[in-house]
Amino acid sequence: MGLLETIYQKSPVFFQSFVLNAKAFELYLERYGKKFWSLFAEFDKNQWLSESDLEHYQNEKLQLLINHAYETVPYYRDIMRQLHLVPRDIKTVKDLPKLPILTREHIKNNYQQLISPKLKGIYLRHGHTSGTTGSPLDVCYDVKTCVVHHVADWRQKYWAGLKYGIPYASIQGRVIVPIKQNKPPFWRKNYINNQLFLSSFHLTNDNMPYYFDKLKKDNIKFVEGYPSTVYILAMHLNKKNTTFPLDAVLTSSETLFDYQQEAIEKAFCCKIFDFYGMAERAVFATECEKHEGKHLNMDYGIIEFLDSKNKPVEKEKLGRIVATSLHNFAMPLIRYQTNDSCSLKAKVCSCGRGFPLMDDVATKNESIVTLPDGRLISPSVLTHPFKPMRNIVESQIIQNKIDQLLVKIVKTSNYTRQDEAALISAFNERLGSEITIKVEYVDLIPRTKSGKFKWVNSTIVPEF
Ligand SMILES: [Zn+2]
Picture 1 (cartoon, rainbow, N blue to C red):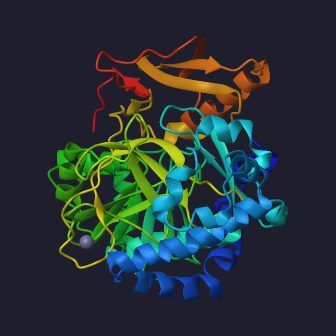
Picture 2: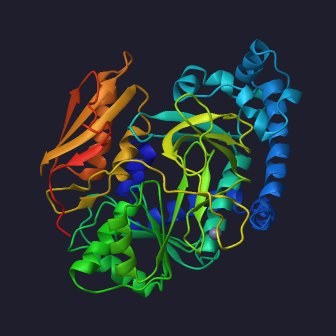
Picture 3: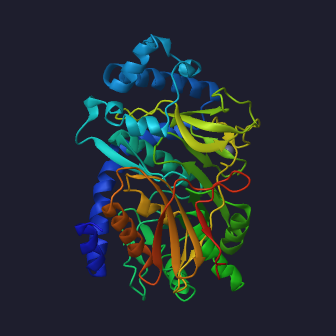
């Protein structure tokens, strides 16, 4: 835990609120200033453009990106020269396959060469992704990419009926309330965005009624969070045969399973708006009020669906998602290969928006972890300790006993004892000391019989 985090954790609630709001204000200026609202107006129009107009939009942005990459990014200049390509060879989305695929390994091995020196320095923002197999990756982007991301995120919120200024609650991965705290408040308020942060680390059957009292008191009608975390709240209500009506629930970051959707929609008497995005900021796909699939936000990035030979697959056929961010000029990700697979739908959405529809992303079914004190922990929350780790190739979390988590790790040769200490401490910080974290080093993580990878696997059945 960093010094600032330590100070935050030990400070009184009013100070934590102050820090949260100071941070929120800084982010507010960056994310919700003039640039935000002018881009929001542009994106608001974009959604109603025809698919061919959107293709035209993509081609224009792509040309700017390719020119910039060729002129200023060493990695792309080298590649294009080797392939005897110049920017005018890649004018449209159809020309993109002339460039090779960019893998996570390419990014790790060419990190500096992928950054445009033109945008180095104070304009750079860093993103960390843990990936779906618990192997971390660093990327960076410019401020514009952050603004675009927030614009796309708010466009999705508007589709769900949540307009800027209306109160809403978020239950995600950050530790905002000290783990040892056993009395409410299990939340902190960001007054600037009218956003209530709920703790993901205090979800016991005894604590959850306080959460609902607070949501009621603050007249909150919208909740966003990881599907598995919102599911824990929903099951608490369902078990008591009661409901808590909301206007909408927004979920992301994990696969939303049918059983979760059913439980959440029953408990909160509303529809879920699920969306798909990633820390690499190359893909954004969002569900509209018709709920007929996820709209590929064509003004955010270009998505290809490819087979194992990197050839495009037909509509309705499953393909690997390969994405090109249209806005990240600091570290252009062109034809970036994600770990996810999905298919493009043949039908168009009845809402009339020009963005094509894709299906749900096929990833894995992870387990919820139960702690000795009854807290239920979402698997997405467990990705956070891995985010700063640089020397881990792959990981897996196994729980066979209530008081022990086994963390299997495939390490790189640079891995040190400090890495292990940092990882265990990050787990303890979130899960407390009643559960022992045991680390085991392995050469590889076995797949299931069907070849699937289950990152978090708990045999303890959660009691809701
Ligand atoms: Zn639609």
